[in-house]
Image 1 (cartoon, rainbow, N blue to C red):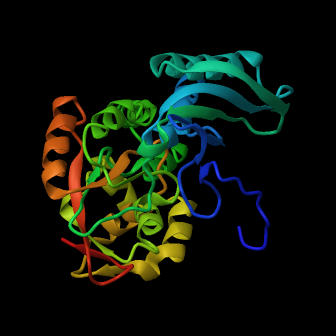
Image 2 (image 1 turned 90 degrees about the horizontal axis):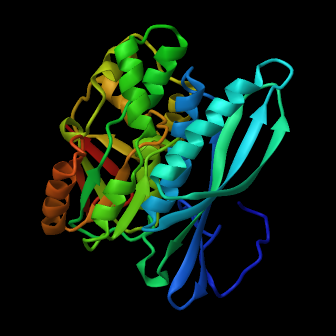
Image 3 (image 1 turned 90 degrees about the vertical axis):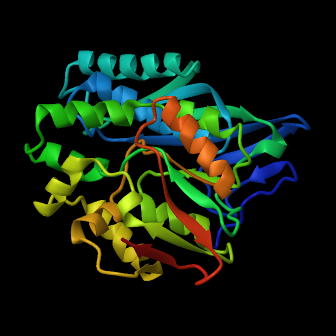
Length: 320
């Protein structure tokens, strides 16, 4: 943030001087900690699944940076005078079950009374100082792999509007509650140059954070980008979240459509995601092997969606 004087430390590997997924601090020559925090209001009606999604989303930044999440603390806001405490219990149970799945310990937390439910985690992970993966290391010729389909923001809007089918609600709920753990463990076996997870800024927004200052450009193949089929339908109905418009207004100057692209697909490129997939940048040869492993491990939606190019610099070209 401009105008603020942040403390410095020679052991700070990743801090606030650049946009990245989390902070990283060196403890020893062989150990660094990754710290992150995230919380939000419910995006599904079921409190247990909301807890699962919020926990998966909070841990995702640690996976994206090549780390292993170890501990977490709850962040809770709850309207005690308006809702039964059993709802909060179910949210916490959902979060706990997801933490158990991730082999993460809940070590504390903080709660306040508020008019609206909010839940999330402050999480800490471990990583070797020389194995930290950041957003800022793109290389010419790299291929970009996305591990989850886009469309959760649009479908969440359709859910709030009462338009989504029960089948669609169940599918998107499971998708958002899925940890990025398997994809993160797989990518550690390859020479990954850069990685981030796709969340509130949408695909284009997070690509922009990787791109700016890199000296490269990115070419996306729209037809290769995994998309939740129902999201296209709801986009055509105008179920576009406000965050998508904000994302578009902020980053559309970086985007160049080489040929006309379906407006619904354009909306999905800016759609804010919750607990989205990893976006992994690595060489063409390594990407072929990683993609095969991801699919073998059941991450069927994963796909190579584009490549890093030398020209034009700091521009996202999108073709059919």
